[in-house]
Length: 123
Length: 98
Image (cartoon, rainbow over all chains, first blue to last red; front, side, top):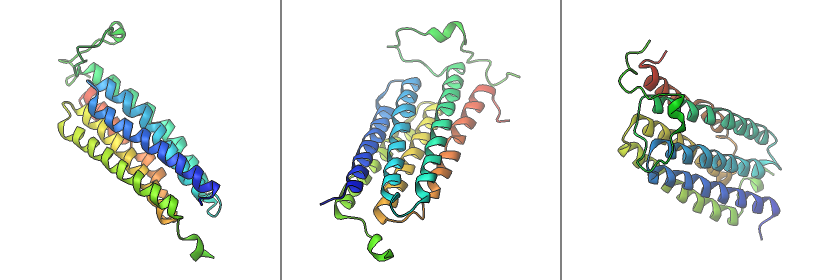
């Protein structure tokens, strides 16, 4: 009979694994770079945070420092992943890496024109 | 006292084996995207996701072994994992790193 801590740990672990695997499948299946970033940036971040939460719950009764380090890890994850995804999407748009043909509307075109031929010689 | 806490319960051991197998499958999908990715941005975002899969594997192994010895690697990987993406982005945008 599993204890309550084991039950919460298992629930967080299964949810986190599901979301991380969903991020990997989306990374493989989506048509262009921006859709892939959408999958990896959102589902991946939440899945990893849930896996860290599972470790925090499991170690909370007998290792007091693990929840502190886990909270630090989740904080850094939520700090760094959106910044990296945003700067990579912007660079990918500027250097023109092919939006999928199914894209309905491209609102960024009026603000940030693609410059595929000027990127490497700029500045 | 340390000996009775150093073993994880059979239920949690079973769940962690299943989750570990699923995460390894997801990591294989990421490696496939790194191999076939048409552009450098695809490869960068796939490597970023692969870092996330590694973090999850380390967390599950910590739970399964009942040892917090490797848990420092988790928050260090969250700190340095995004540097590759930022470097690739700066290279694509400006043509140089610094």
